Length: 416
Image (cartoon, rainbow, N blue to C red; front, side):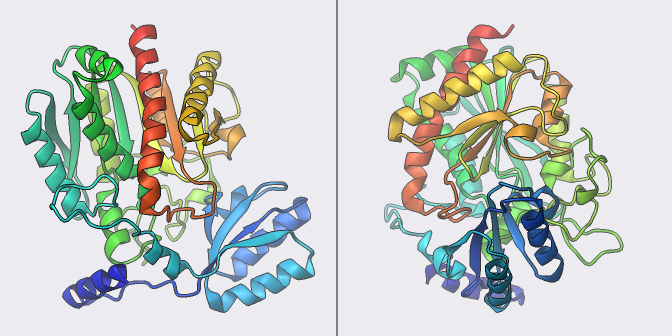
């Protein structure tokens, strides 16, 4: 209810009607063979399927778990096609709007302090970046690396004491609807600064290396997902000769950018943009990383959902030269995650573990020369999908923190 009230107030102010998802369904289908996979692809041509996993129609293949959202109106005909073809499916979410409301299951902190157990909108996150600098000026600084199409600032928080050190670059929220991702970046900064001098590992890390943390990569999209459309994924740039808005920032990097025909439609959720680094957000991040390339030894990006720890490549099935090393780190990283709440993650190269991707930040950073690049797909495995309840933020962040600390320790010890 609170989310609806907030939206109604914003709507009145903007004069734009937000999207509601009353009785929208999320289906999970497992096509048994190519014929069944093609049935899903055909359904996508005649119905508006919002693919949650994989992220686009052309990735659908036999024996793959496929999750998609569909309106109540279209769900009956889709269900009927699945039944007629004896396809195995379940309905993960029966009323999407209800799940959106249920996300907010943690009470507000009446003290007015920044809450790490709640999802925070952009205004709260901006205020929080300032607060972190004021609270720990000797350790945290805020760097404006650029701005968005809608002129919102892109802030990186640098945690550490000395410029001339190894560093790790981390970003969250490249896809707007993946709210657990920015929640983790906030948690990381808070825990790193709070535990310095108390936790042995974190103290050692911060004494010897820097972290550059971009808490929200896709600021405009994130704001839109709070105010207008909870399921929004892309940024908010206008596309030439199209009424469809937005580019998928994680298809906009200059790495095998032009090789997937599925990414050239401006109306697609995985639209790559008119050119590599065409988007102000992508350009700000790539320029920053290039400027600090000497010191950045690892790049970590956080997404959701599906509980995976991935590494290059996405654009080819060819294994990276240091595959053994990356595989070892990812294996131990997933083992470490499971020690806290027994959450099971799988790991491996993107192309073989999930599906091929082009123009991704992970592959770009790797090919630029950062030889330890990882992508976390955080909780869960589909019960809530992008709508992970707030009550699961802390457990998700706590277990992820263990893996990030392990990766950072490894980088400290094994890179020059």
